[in-house]
Structure formats: C-alpha cells, structure tokens
Image (cartoon, rainbow, N blue to C red; front, side, top):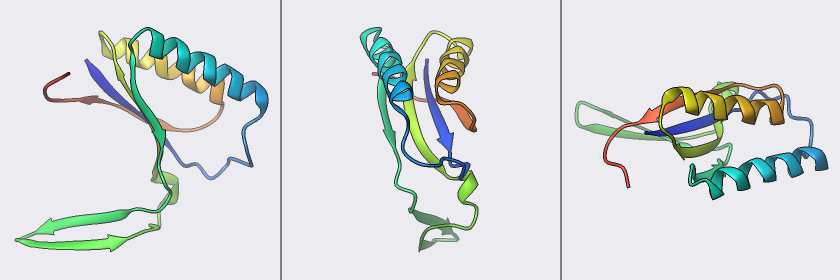
Length: 112
C-alpha cells in the first residue's frame, strides 16, 4: 500500500532547523530509504497555481492563497503493508519535528 504523508504550513516555524533535528531526521530518512519504504520526499514552494474546470471552462489562478495554514508544504511518499504502519511512521516523524499538522492519504491505483 502506498501513502502520501503531507505536512501543512502552520506559520509557526521560526527559522532554520537546529543541528539535532537535522541529524535525527537524516537518520530517520536513511532508515526508511534502506528499508525500501520511502519512495520520494520533498518540500513544496509556498506559492502555487490553482486550476479549476467547470462546464468546459478551465480557470487558472496563481497563488499565494488566503488560507496559507492549510497549504501543504512538504510530503513523503511511502510504501508500507498497512494504514497502521503509515500512521506509526508519521508519529515517528512528528516526534522528531515537533508541533505541526499534516495528513496521511492512501494513494490509489497501480503500484510500481
């Protein structure tokens, strides 16, 4: 099963991460990569483009958008055996990072 774990911008980050956090996150990422669980990870630019299709008309709007706290700013695509395993990995991530908010969603469709 594949899951997309996403972090949202809570506007509380007060600067660059400290060295301890970088070391712990590096170990966690390396462990998940070696285990074949981590498929992709990255941060997302805070500004984006919204695309909406309605009645055959496509509208494109450039951001930033009003609800920045709802914006997804980072992601990890993982492959695990169950939703419970995805939740446990997400809990480990948040124990390293600290306060924040995110989502976990199952990726549907053909796998690799």
